[in-house]
Image (cartoon, helix red, strand yellow):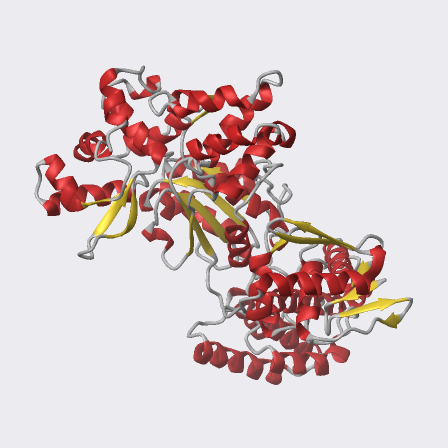
Length: 622
């Protein structure tokens, strides 16, 4: 069986097209195929089918489409229901997209190895898999979401193939094809460079010069930018009379904006290991992957993505999982840096820069200097024009983050931090909230073992409630349950039921909810730190600034300033408004217990204080 998406969505069995109709049925099939056996959520399928105006019968219609596909495809293809969506395994069947990607990758490797005949053959084979516009008979929502990256991949593969043909001296045969491609893609500078090269080697220097000036005018009119480095270098070589020479083999491998210096190291692969049992966050994960993927439009806009949320919500786990899923978009490597030291303090940018520069190589050329400007210049030189993914974890502020951002659009940057950062202006921001009860239960099951949780549903529900949707807390409890195979979860659920001792129970090895909140608390200004426990005593319900002002004996404006500082530190949430339209604030239940534990004056590094009558009274205050 063959599946095709690089053109109209089709299924072929024994060389014959399998008949089925309807844009929505084709959309469901294409979405499952593109997901590559990973789960695609109902929400995602809904958007690909109906955009932002779904019908009231979404679930029933999705079930109907999947049932029809199962009947059409038969037993050779398996479509599983895996909450929160569906996943499809095509077994021994083929998918034209997979074949295209394999051939394109092999062709690029042959091009780098200077085997131009083989590269051209492989790349032509990859391009032959295309049969028109991707998803031509599916919905416009699917085409808008998925077609741009595939169209970009095809254009890059085409550039690779032309580079191989130019290296073999086939410039005269390429001139006509390249002329049409420049008209089709007027903003793709590499194709313009290739046509200038072909024209020059065919004795048409005047036409090549005209082509450069036309491109410069198009770039200025359409984007308001000057030609890039590669186009300018091609023009200089044309004027110097060196463009008509045969290229140094391997000097122009498409996929980079300029000839990169030879390096003694391979592509960096610094990502931490992926979380094997990563659970939930499907909408956020899809948003991250879409934001990190090339847009295919050549817009030149930097890809910047920011994941925010309080400590323990799983920002790092989500970012690393998304980075692993998106690796195929970043052939030049993935960088990772934790911007927080083991003691919770922010790491200085110069230390981080030196680590990243050593990964980008050559390591022996990284200067042992404290001159941050010099390191930034070298860092931006080594990242320029490279398809890199840079993950900057636990960012504390603009001063720390600014020097670590590349100054060209090719590298994508994924940042995690407690709150929005002005340095990442214009970034896609994903603000994490606590997990819903269903996702919380799924995470607890993954950590503790499904059988252990299924055997004690009452205790599991109680644990989920006590952990209040905090992934760190759920993973701690799940780890403790898994480590005690002869102990039922009920005992731990009873110990978590007491709010005074709950934080002390949320500890396992290096995982500790209390410790995870300390860096946020330490970063507060002294005046904000001083009022933190008193505000927690206001109770678990949302409260306005006026109530806080009364409790603290402060003017309302001053109280609101302190509350906003806590919200900026992700130690307080803004939760709607009161009847007069004033914002209300709310403590996450575990953050409130952390704040109340500080009311005893215990040393923060020693964990939650022992249970006292005063602490009990504060905890149970309504």
